Image (cartoon, rainbow, N blue to C red; front, top):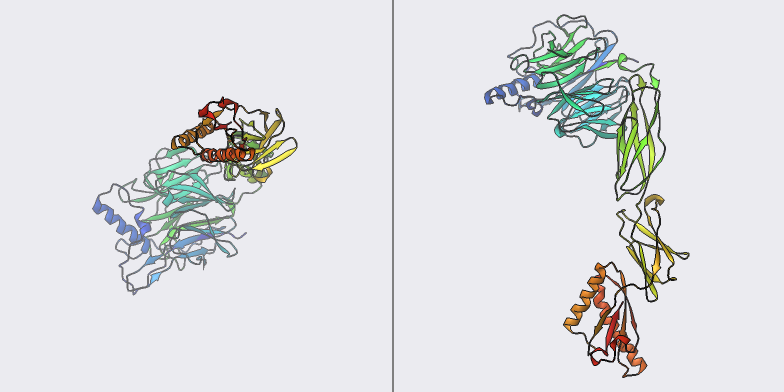
Length: 601
C-alpha cells in the first residue's frame, strides 16, 4: 500500500492583497483565561496573524527550506485554514493537500469545506476533516468518495483514528466531550471537559485529551479520568514510538510561548526548531517529529525534527503555506500478524423493570476490554470485565439488541450483537367478583407501554386494554387468569384468581317520591366514590317500589329509579348494571319511609 501524508495548509495571500484581515473565531479559543485585557488582545492578533498569514512583522523562521524529501515510506496530508483578506478582496478557501513520499502534492480538498480545524487519516489512506463551522466530520476515502460522519456534534476539533478498532475519536469541543464514531454510531466516551482540542490513544485503550485551559487529561479504558503533567494550555497531543507523550503546549516555558515537548513523567523536554507558532505536532512510528508552523507564509511552514535528534529542519512542500495540521499515513501504523478475538454471548430473556448479568466468552487474547457500541432504547447496557449488565425499563417490552466490541493488545478487535427478549411484568392483585349475573375481573394497570390484557376463564378468552373486564358470570369459585401481552409476542406470567360471590356492602337509598332530591343525589355520588376507592369496578343497581300498581307499572317505575341512580354512580367510573324488581324489598320493612327504595350492591 502506498502511504502518504496529509497537510492542512493555508493558501498564500496574493501580493496585491493588504495585510489587514478579519479575525477568525477559531483563533480566539486558544487565548489563555485570566490574561490581562491588553495582553489577551495582543495574543488574539498574533494568533489571527498566524492563522491568516497576513501579518509578517514577526517574520517566519529564518532557516532556508530544506530540499530533502519526506523520510522514506512516509506521506502525509496537510491542511490550510480558510482565511478572509481585506474586505475589498476575495476570500481564500481552505485547502487540503496530499503529499507523496517524494514531496509532490495533490489537492484533495473535500467539496463544501468551510472551516477545517483538524485532520487525521487511516492506515488505508482515508482522510477525515473536522469542519468546525459546519459542526461535521467529512470523510474522503482513499478512492475519493466523500461522506459525512457523526451526529450531534458542536464545533468538533481534534481527531484521532484508532487503527485497531476502526473507530474515529473526536474532541467535540462545543459540547465539552469526547465521542467515538464507529459503525455509523456516535458514542459518548467522556463528558464534562473544558474545551477539548486534541486527542490520541494508545494500544492499552487509554485516551489522552488536550483540554485547552485544563491541561492534559488521561481517560483509561474504564472511563476513569486523571490529570497528566504540568500543563495548562495544550492544543495538540501525540505519542512517540515508546509511548511517551508529545505535547504542543502554550505558556508553560515562558509567557506567550509555544513549545513542542516530550513528556514521560517529571519535567517535559522541549524539541529544538525554528518554528514560532506550533499549530500541530505529530510523530511517526520511526520517531521523526513533524511540526506545522501556522505563522509561516512560505512553502517551508512544515518542520521536521529527525528521530536521531538535533535541531529541526524545514521541509519544502510546494504550493503550501501556513500549515495548520498534519495527518501522517504510515504503513507501520497498520496492525499486522494479529490474533483473532472470538466473542460469544447467549440470547437472554429478561423481565421489564429487572436487571440481569450476562457472561461474555472471549477467546484469542488475554486482558480483552469490552465496550458497548449500542443498545436498543429502553434497555441499559454496561460492560465490566467479561460481563454485560442489563436493565430493562419497566415500560419496555419486546425484542432488544445489544452490540458490543471486544479489543485487546495484539488482537484484531471484533464486534458482535446478541438478542435480549424483554417480557412485561405480571400484574398481581387480580380479583374476580360476581355481581348478579355478571362477573367483574379487576387488576392493577401494567406499566408496559401499549399493554394488552388477555383474560381467560373456562375456555373463553377476552382481550382488553382496560384494567378491568365485566362479562357474564361463570361458575362461582371458577379460576380467572390475567396475562399481560407486550410487543413482539412477549407476555408475562399468568396471574390467577378464584371467582367469589358478591362480597360488597349494600347501600340502601329510600325516598318517598319518585324524583331524587339534591341531598339524595349527593348521597348516591358519595357512595359511588366510596366503592371506587375500595377497588370496585362494577355495581348492580336494583330498583324497588311499593305494590300499589300493576306489575308492568311497578317494573317500569323501579327500572327508571335504578337508571337514575346508575347515572350518578357512573360519575365514579363504575360499570353499572341496572335492574327493576317491581316489588318492595325486604329491607323496606313495611315502613312508609322505605316503601320506595334502591339497593346498590
